[in-house]
Image (cartoon, rainbow, N blue to C red):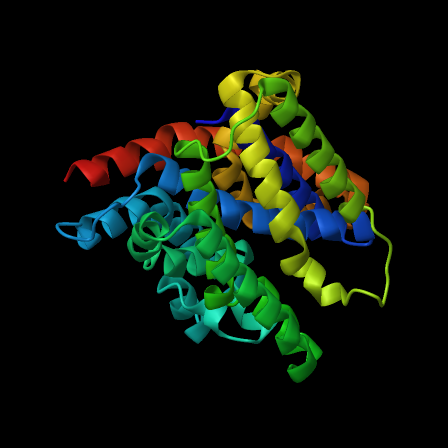
Length: 336
């Protein structure tokens, strides 16, 4: 585990929670879009760092998918079914149960029930291609792989001019094949780190990581503009700076640097460990907090108080879920 990258997972998970209940700030919106792209990149990166595929011969696809699904599907299913209390039963429930909601262009479908689970649906689709992507990342030179992905990203920018705005938001932010790009990029980045293709001292990688953090924060604070269509900020804008940041932090931590020591602060790493559970629990916790607020004080909390109460509740709930549900259940299912 690369602690500095794990910490960023935790930070982005908290930002995403804030966004869902305080989306008036452009910076929060941008940071959330950045965080979602980071999660897809890191999913491919982390998986390839620990489970690279150099040959497809004898690769157990069934076992691989079972192990992946054992990690996220049980919690997804439990929280989706819990939402029946609030939304009843309709066809959207089954779309969520079978992880196909992210294939629908309408937001009231892909963000239905436990709304954040659209990410799980898109990630599950990416897992179907992991072995093939990992295999070809070793067959092709990194420069070729990056050139192919770069060409796809350039092509994707042109789709904006042929799509209605509401469909474009879905296409760049949710559409599973579109999210294969950052997932595949993460796999290539893992090879760059593991094969030690790029060399340099700890201080150089540390400075590069710091510079890229500044670049990412600068883009997050970027004001509204027509020069770059805002819809691009949902995904495409983040791929290059985040890719460089991931590699720089990986290299800097391997060699030891100040920036990675700061980001390796234990509370941040701990948040990263439970980031998936934070992400998954936030919708249900927010609905419960909203109902309790109406019962206790007769109206909803103001946004700032609402967010604070949600975070105070969702973090310990996420930790308990991680320790006593998702982790032991995943181990049990994988052992079968």
